[in-house]
Amino acid sequence: MSEPSERPQGLGLVVPSSNTTAEPEFRAHLPESVTVHGARMALESVTVDELDAMSDDAARAAELLGHADVDAVAYACTTGSLLHGPGFDAELEERLAKAASVPAVATARSVVRALEALDAERIAVVTPYTSDLDEKERDFLEAAGFGVESIDGRGLEANTAIGALTPDDVSRQVLEHVDDAADLDAVFVSCTNYRSLAAVDDLESKLGVPVITSNGATLWDVCGTAGIAIDGPGTLFDHDR
Image (tube, rainbow, N blue to C red; front, side):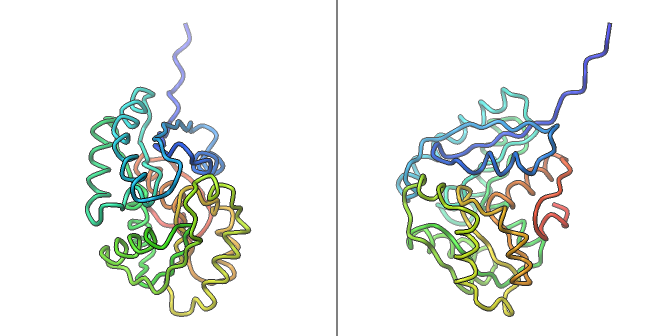
């Protein structure tokens, strides 16, 4: 009788229901042997009220992913994990880890870890969000110890509109907003539904500074947590979690 094969590693993603980007971007950069499993929380518009309501579904989504015997869970939503200010991201990770019975990361906290790994202090931020969410993001990042030199948003609320944007749209927004990166340590492209990972290498080449994205930071963080070796785009993936 043959021995059972080794169990494949798996990651669980807790994502907004209207997010069409996180799962494909994760899948594109993970080894074929690693499986990706999603659980969704209801959200159509990226507004404070909908993000707040969505977070109520997070623990249940993580619990269900735990049934799939995943190695770690990622809460893949940036503003949803920083909405209530400093400390909420860490509390969210603890809540999801308890629900899933495996380690968990949340995008906002993953971004902080990524910027710290890069020794970044002065950053520019590019988002698809409205101004009220941009200000919440600025407050969160500054409370975490980073100097937000500038922040630029597209003013979008409909998450499907954000998901329809392309890596070329990301590149144009970044290059129009960051005309001189000489005084920056990094550029952060926010939102797990903003298709930006494919633009990272080219942007780093043009700007001469590290560029991190919400999905890139979350992928780097959750893979480090789960002990999964990965070679992703950009400077970040040259650093250990």
